[in-house]
Image (cartoon, rainbow, N blue to C red; front, top):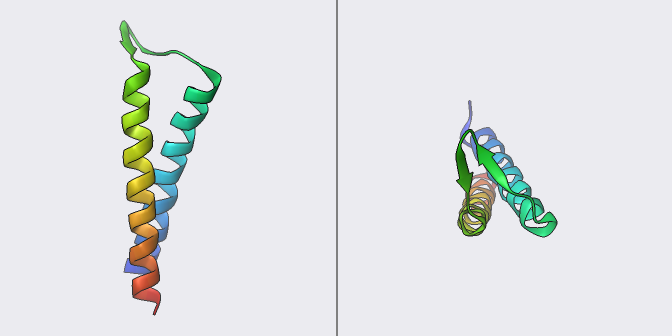
Length: 66
């Protein structure tokens, strides 16, 4: 896999993760993994991290494309 393909793929995956958590926050959904209840503040962290990593991947893609 080339570096450009890796950057696009990972950016898309992180962006989808961030969008999923943003949607969860907007809808007010609860998240349960078995007996464990995931608090809403955890989605804020994942949203910020996913958006940051997705943007970083796109920045690296643009740098390798030039």
